[in-house]
Every structure is written in structure tokens, then in C-alpha cells.
Length: 321
Ligand code: FAD
Image (cartoon, helix red, strand yellow):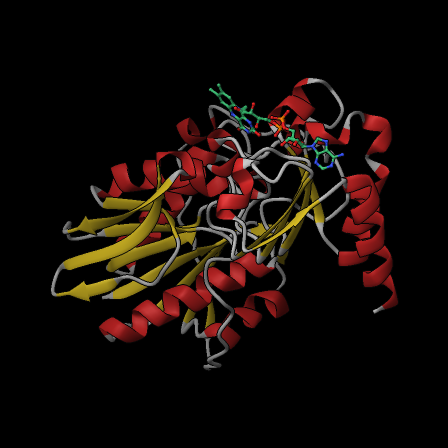
């Protein structure tokens, strides 16, 4: 038996979240004393694949063909299913990324597996029962889910687990299984990147602005602080609804869920629907001129005051650091 981890690449490169899922899956594999098999789909060079062994992958399967260069949900799910069956995997781990959110339930259905998605911690495993903490109700709460199926699928949130190096010698093996033509009924023709800046779902630091910023012309103070910190920028829903910022930056129940190490909320009231998207953040800093703003209740650090005075001072301090 084995633990299988599906490792996503972006244009042939594994991002930090990919190495996080391998570290996480390795910790599970060690707990249940099974080897860790990593599966990569798409065109990734051997030297990048080999890097997965640094985080403990014992075997690295690589499935590649022209049709698999872009993410295709059905086809990718079919390949992961075939790999899980071939490797007799009891647990399949993948990232709860944009692609992973679509893949995980499809894969669980194919494998007749129990599914825990939005997972934020290592599970406890007793016999065939696995218990794990995950986000629930669109991120408004946490729940402990119990899986007792023979095969289990876990989708891990970005930034929820630290990188852990545990180098092993790994072999790279071509995985020849080809999906059926039906799996390509829907394909991605073109990917248009909204921005070249730090990717929001994976960002370790997020600087986020709300309606308190008054208008798009004032977003410079958010961008300057983000640039100084190497952070991604985000916003509340009314801000993107008003067209001040792109919808891709909208965080919350109806937007993107983030789990950075540091979330800085500037001029955002802290409505439950916004908090839903940030509940897994490790440290929350709130800047708001209203001391009664609900956001302060979940803040680790709060500054009561005018964002237009405070934010440039923080940016200057970060730059001089
Ligand atoms: P406001 O509520 O207007 O708050 C602005 C804040 O800025 C205030 O707290 C104010 O004190 C502060 N402020 C003003 N001036 C300054 C200043 N100079 N310096 C510092 N602080 C200042 N919202 C989301 O964000 N994400 C979602 O996914 C989402 N989904 C929703 C889904 C549903 C079904 C519904 C009904 C609502 C949803 N909302 C969502 C909207 C949500 O309820 C709030 O209306 C929204 O989050 C408020 O945005 P805001 O905090 O930017 O604006």
C-alpha cells in the first residue's frame, strides 16, 4: 500500500504549495508506515521532478502528453485515479487549490473514497479511521471530519503546513496511462493571467483594502505596502463590485479563501462574509478608524486610526528595515 500525492505544476514549475503537500503527505506516510508516491501531470523537467524527493517522495510518477499540458479536470482525475489504483493507495493527498477544489470531489467519487477538503492540520489515524480538522461553511468555522472509507482523499489548504525536508533517493517513472477521449470533452484553450504579481491564494502575506479606502485612486497606499512586504493585494467584495479592484482580488465567502501567515486588513469592517475567506490566516492585523469595527474581535493586532495616516508610515518603516 502507499500514500499518493498529486503535485500541481505551473508551466513546469512546482510552487511552494506543491512542496507543502508533499511534506504533508510524507508526514502521513511516516505515521502509517507506507511509502510516498508523488504524481506529476504535464510537462515537467526531470530536475524539477527530482526536487520532490527532497520532501520525501520515494517514487515519482510522471504523466505527460501534449493534451495534458493544461489542466483538464476529468482527464487529470482519471489519471490520479489510475495511479491510486496501480499504487494501491490508501490515502490520496492534493492541494485545495483552484484546480484541486474541482479535482478532489471528482476523484473521491471515482475512488469511492471519503473526502476531507480545506484541511488545515495533520490527521490522527486509528486503524481505518482518519480524523482531520478542516474549514467548514465557506471558511466561517472549523470542523473535525472523520473518514472511515477504505480509500481517503485529503485536499490541503495552502500555507496550512510547513515545508519539511526529508531527502530520500527516488526513482522517476513514466506513468503511461492515457485518459479516454471523453475525458477531454471540456478543455482549457488559453490561460490569460490577470496579473504577474504574487498569487493571492498562495501568498504568505496579504494586504487587503476595503471601502474605507474611499476610491480606486487611493489604492496606491495598499500597493506600496504590499510591494514593500512582498505581499499580494486583496479587497472586500464591495470594492470589487464597484470596479475599484479586479474580482480576482475579492476575498471572502463569495470570493477567494486565503490562508497567509499575515493578513493586513485596511478599512474593512469585518463582516462575517469577509471573515469566511480569511479564517485560516495565522496572524491578522486590522487598521480601522472605528474602534467598534467587528474585525478587531478576530485581530491579533489592531490599530485604531486613519488608514491614510497609518499605512504610509508602516510602509516607510518596512522599507527602512
Ligand atoms: P464597509 O462595511 O463599508 O466598511 C468600511 C470600513 O472602513 C468601516 O469599518 C470603517 O470604519 C472603515 N474606515 C472608513 N474610513 C477609514 C479610514 N480612513 N481609515 C481606516 N478605516 C476606515 N464581503 C466580502 O468582503 N467578501 C465576500 O465574499 C462577501 N460575500 C458576501 C455574500 C453575501 C451573500 C452577502 C449578503 C454579503 C457578502 N459580502 C462579502 C459583503 C459583506 O457583508 C460586507 O458588506 C462587506 O464585506 C463590507 O465591505 P467593507 O468592509 O469594505 O465596507
